[in-house]
Image 1: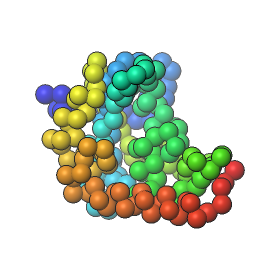
Image 2: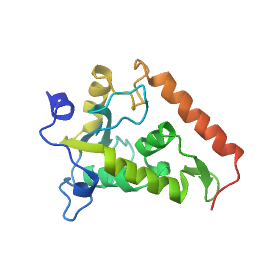
Image 3: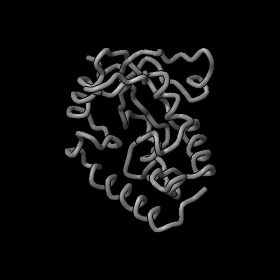
Length: 181
């Protein structure tokens, strides 16, 4: 089953490998899975699949330009405003979330995002499988596997309410702080 390729992959890829050119990550549709050599929270286990994501996401009214390569690379070096995974990891690691720009977007600021990118380079590893309609597989995986860092479609997970609370607290604190440059 596809879950095995994500749960027990033949290979896990580091940030350094994924960010090289040419990248080993295909510019194709699919599902990616994140494993962590060090968990981002004491209640989570190391060395196992904690999160799955997809590229592109299902869009009924337009075509997404996202693919596995763009998404995986963005998670390793982007910011929390464009990556739910980065947002979740930063909150779990206790980084200070700030409103930026117009005040609608939230990131961990330059220093926080740099720290998070380094933390991910040190501890996060990724694998993927190509899938033409990844949203169908994502739903099956989330319903059947223990994926504590996924929130969407995952209320049944034991860590779900704790993660929602941690993320909500970070957002609330950010709203109380001035907009950061």
